[in-house]
Amino acid sequence: MGLTDHTGGTRMDPGEGGQPAPTTSQLALLPLRLFLGVTFAYAGIDKLTDPDFPASMSDLLHSIPNAAAPWLLDLALTNPEAFGYGIALGELAVGIGALAGLLMRLVAFGGLLISLSFWLTVSWDVGPYYYSQDVPYLMAWVPLLIAGAQIYSLDAVVGKRRKRSGRRLYG
Image (cartoon, rainbow, N blue to C red; front, side):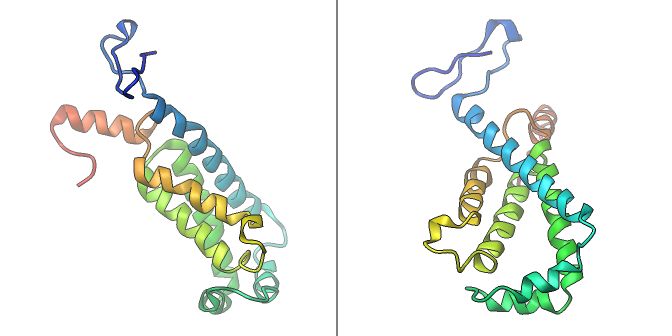
């Protein structure tokens, strides 16, 4: 593995054929990406394998006393089963995408939106706000939205191939 100097730059590791080693900042995001990936994939699988799902969605949505975005609840209540499947499949897609590091900024945006929608509806009434489990998930997606998945990811593999061919990965 390469060595990171005091400025955050990367030195070449002579044992890796001149390939730059991951920086400390890149490595620091890896546990977060893996945690969010496993958690969101598990949440989606858990919902989809629950024998009471999605029938339980209507009761859950009706049990929310106060929401910052009641229009989200109204929208979900138009078809609670479809909404439940949408959330479960969204969580699964976000989880798998985060684990693979594929289209990471898009995945992080999806995870952020799911967490934000939960915070504005299901856990809005939790007080004080820092007791809400959705706020940390919401904020945890932000660094991945900004930085993407630069190492140990399909985005990195695609980026290296595109760099060799002269094409850019994003934009």
